[in-house]
Structure formats: structure tokens, C-alpha cells
Image (cartoon, rainbow, N blue to C red; front, top):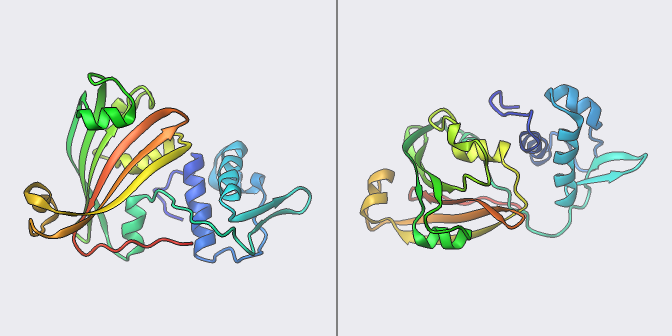
Amino acid sequence: MSETLDTRSWRGVHVELLRRIQTKEWLPGAPIPNEADLAIEFGCARTTVNRAMRELAEAGLIDRKRRAGTRVALNPVSRVVLDIPIIRLEVEQRNASWRYTLLERAVCPAPVPISSRLGVERETPMLHLSALHFADNKPFLHEDRWINLSAVPGVERIDFSAISANEWLLQNARFTHGDITFSAEVAGESRAGLLSADPAAAIFVVDRITWDQGQAITSVRLSYAPGYDLHSQI
């Protein structure tokens, strides 16, 4: 288990339980420790573990039966489940060393296309963050993010030079669903400079908005350095 993963939050517990399933540390059909034991292991409340387990059950990855306990699903449901990855872990899983640099932080209104998509008034102050993630000291991706201050109280006090918004939000901000778009774009001059790429190079781009019921939490654009390949599971 990663020492820096905050397993006091349900998302941190969820990430660790999912890792154990995906890496076959817990084999299909194997029993999973009960919530009380996991809460002791992670140093969190039992309700925190319960929330993480519910997410796994709803994704069809575990079977929960009263009196029979909880087991890793033998036959997961046939549907695609896209988890929002912690970028640090994604880099480390590629056997690379992760590093992160915050380039810009400001509280200001978002551009009209973004505020319109988020359903907020044009002049609503939002937290804007621009950051670079590195793999073995080479640019991995550029993160351009807008956070709805009213949806995440206190977020403006977080030191995002010490932890990425990607990781902090996954561990601390509740969300119910999201919208995601994948595209290929030409890097252009500004992103080429950030990603050490040719301006004419094709790059992989992810645009994502996460929501808590009807309230938008954050809009983020992730622009990956050339050569990135997406891995998912079905």
C-alpha cells in the first residue's frame, strides 16, 4: 500500500481495495476481510470502509451477501467501468518516478465555455490551477483545472504546491457522476512548450467534469505528452 495514500478517506480506501483486486492480491472468489478489520488496518471509521465497499459492489467487482460475507466477484458484470486515476499512481504503475509542479494558481471567473458547461454564473469566482506532472523528469501531462468553490468548501485554503488537485479531490470531494471526452489534438505552441513536444505533434486530451448530483465540482483538461497510451479494463 502506498504510504502517501490517505486511507482515512473513503476514496483512499476505495483506491487501495481496487488495487488489491486488480493486482490479484485478492483472487476472484476469495473472501475479503470484514469492514471492522479493514477499518482497524486503515485507521479509519467503519462507515468509511462501508462507503468504499458499496462503490466496489455497485461496480460489480465484489459480491456482498448477508451472513455469507464479502468476496471478490467470480464473474464481474459485463460493463466498462472507468475510474478516475490518481495521476501519481498512474505514473508509478508505469515504473517511473512521479514529480509535480504547480505552474499557476488564481481565483477568478472561468472562461464562458467552461462556466456555461458547469452551469455557474459567468462572473462566479472559481479556483484555477495549472500544473505539470512528470514521469522520470519528463513531462507526462499538463493539468488545467477549474474548481467550483461553492461545491468544495475550504478548497481555496489547500496548498496545491504540496499535493495535486487530482489526488486531493479524489480523496476529499464527493462526486456522484461525471462527463468525459477523449480526443486527439495538435499540441500547438503553448502546450508544446509545456510538454517538450513539437507544436505539430498529436497529443491525447481528456476533458472531464465531475458532479455531485446537480452541482458541478470541477472541470479539468488533461493534455498528455506524445506517445501516451491509455490502459483500461473491461
